[in-house]
Length: 450
Image 1 (cartoon, rainbow, N blue to C red):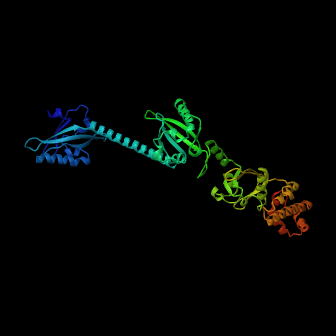
Image 2 (cartoon, rainbow, N blue to C red; image 1 turned 45 degrees about the vertical axis):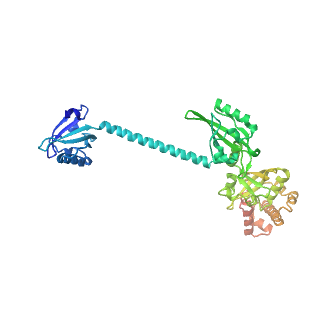
Image 3 (tube, rainbow, N blue to C red; image 1 turned 60 degrees about the vertical axis):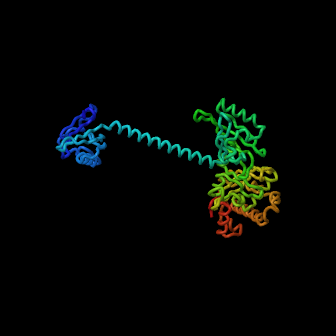
């Protein structure tokens, strides 16, 4: 009867040695119990189970209430085989009977349960992290985002940017009817937008009117969740707000292109203060970021001693635009590059502003026609700057032009012989070398013949 009711039955003598064994389960591995007879029972289990065997034998010897204890045996492959034992006293000679039940199926189910719990915990952790990221993105996003129930048309969720744009509190916005947040004249547009979304799952951008006649561009995306349809609506304001000018997505793409273009671009107000500049201008001016240029005068980096910039701004303001104005851009650390500047004035902007593009000009390997250069500094152009540029700057610029022309003429007359040219000009050779370097004549095709 014991053999039928148990998977393994052992007869243990008073010294704890196995004197007999009976296997009732056909699927129980025989190599586990091989060699148990004549061997102390405590030596057949793993180290952590020996204390349990000792307690089972002691309870049986003292006649205490019996309890089931799970121990682990090992097979020939080194794997643990769990069995659950209860020991009963058998006869006055100190023998005991150990009734064991195979716990492999239960242990396997427990392992599966633990693995399932770990998997659920990992999935829950991922969902929690995903929700945290979603909440954070909604909170910090400057783009107005609304989540609309496709069945009822009510706002399910919104971010702070949407509440600020629609001039609603979060409590009032969430749960409101989506069309109620816009002008009544846009009801037909919103209805058509919803119909288009339900039928095709996509829609073109639609201009909607907010409070105070402010315009916003709306775009939407459809998605499903728990067999329900939702619309993710994004709003792009089209007017000037307290944070500055906000533009539509297409205009934003154009601005990103200007920022990435290889030619320099700088936007200034009518007082020559820089409002914005792209990466190419910052590179030519040897600046680390746009903040170093914003609010500074363009004269600091563009033109020769302020004269070029004064003439450039005067021409743009008077004519509305200027093309291919030749000047230089001076780097923060002393580099000088020849550039051609084109500009356009926007007097009706807020504030009025002027945009300039700066294209680098490769250095000429031959001497330029000085007659053409002198045209840029004609009397008419110089007189236009009177009152706009200090007299000392005008005199310095004119003096530099005349000095350069005289030096180049002397070099040409003396076949580039610098010693003779210095004598002709009444200069020492050292002074001539300094002026050649300052005007960049060394790199313009004149040799070093002395």
